[in-house]
Length: 253
Image (tube, rainbow, N blue to C red; front, side, top):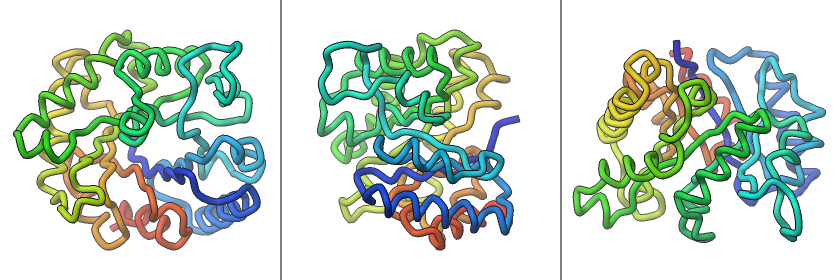
């Protein structure tokens, strides 16, 4: 049975002290009112080791926002999967649209990152999604399938058990356009069919697929009511404990 998850992606926000304080607030809030789903906070690299010390892992799990595509060596400024794992993190986000767009991460680079993350005992939240131009050209299915084919559909069935997928409608983030819950459900249902084609129906039914659009406390319940949406990858709303909890609480309604 697939896991319901709400994951926060802090992006490049919060200094170390602010991040630890936010993690403590989220942790204490959820300890007092235990969530009805899995909760992960994915923080900048500098936060990981400190935040790991303040989380109750039975309530909130920890993830990184990225890792390197090399195991170790002379790669100034990079952070390896082994380094991420050593902090106490359990997850890593890979393939986020911002990494693809701003840092030109290709499917082959992401394939290497996924392999290294899994080899070091990390679970991967792997992102996929299409741009506005691709959506308007009705190429969204083709684009998402190519992203999965290029980076994760090479994995064994056993490795696949450590993959969580997150669909990001890039065209609905900062464009003034809005993805409806029906559009999100349609794409997640499609993703589940191509996972079934690759790994079988049982594996597809067990795969957690998150929605990575503009999920807020006001629309989370509507989104999470859809049969193929197993939770959210949350950006800005994860930076306020009350908003983040409001999204998490959507699973109780």
